[in-house]
Length: 121
Image 1 (cartoon, one colour):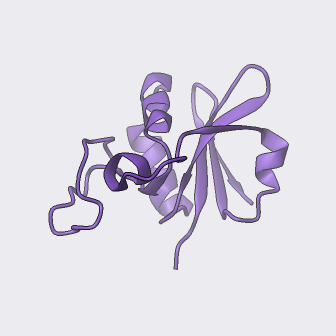
Image 2 (cartoon, rainbow, N blue to C red):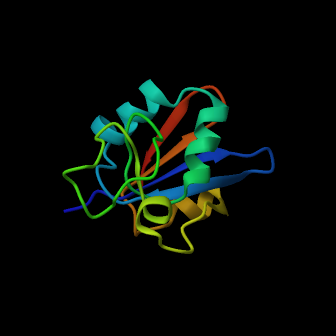
């Protein structure tokens, strides 16, 4: 079963730019990866530019075959747009309080420019 999450960055206008991540959204996985491998705003923005993810990993990586897990690089993110060719997977923008009300995800991760915040939705 998937533990879904949103991963985002706080903007000065109070909105959050964010993407969806389908698997392993719990703090011991996605939270740990974000805290250890996505610690500056430029890298976080690069991650968001990738669009919605199936799996968050240590590195953004390069295009790979979404359906062939035998060739999947475990250290690279697995993205719906880049790797499976889906459309409408780009980052989105919402107000923080609206994201907290989203009952389609279990966790919300927000980078404020210095550190990650984790919310159990």
